[in-house]
Length: 181
Ligand code: S3P
Image (tube, rainbow, N blue to C red; front, top):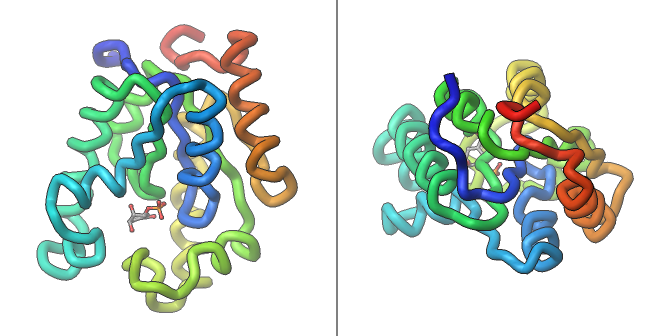
């Protein structure tokens, strides 16, 4: 069963370092809408950083906040939505994503980790980033593939080109909610 239809025009998923926010900004400009990044939305609502939420309340609490934020974004944000890399792990989030066009931004570890850097902004990748990133991708890759109606390769394509590909797929009607497929 899928929930109520989304207002969001398109959702970007993928691991940390895939460029969801960067591509999302360019895509939003092409579509003349706004980008909502669910990581930023959680931080604004909580008045603290994701790292602080992880440290103070633990990952399960962050995941609950993130899930609520994603549902709100899908229902209310009439634009582009970029999801945090782990949002697809929540089965109800995956179900909610049935009602909106979803793009999976693929990226290799070699490209992703330098983009992510070693800052504390991604608490899951602070320790042993290579091993952690690989483990996350082994479990999440099938989930990203499951929710996506379009997969794009961010290793080889520049940001403007990726955003244009997505905008054109939407325009042609090739990228539709899976509930309508
Ligand atoms: C996470 C990814 C982060 C953020 C949090 C957890 C993850 O978002 O939601 O640090 O589990 O992969 P980005 O994918 O935007 O880095």
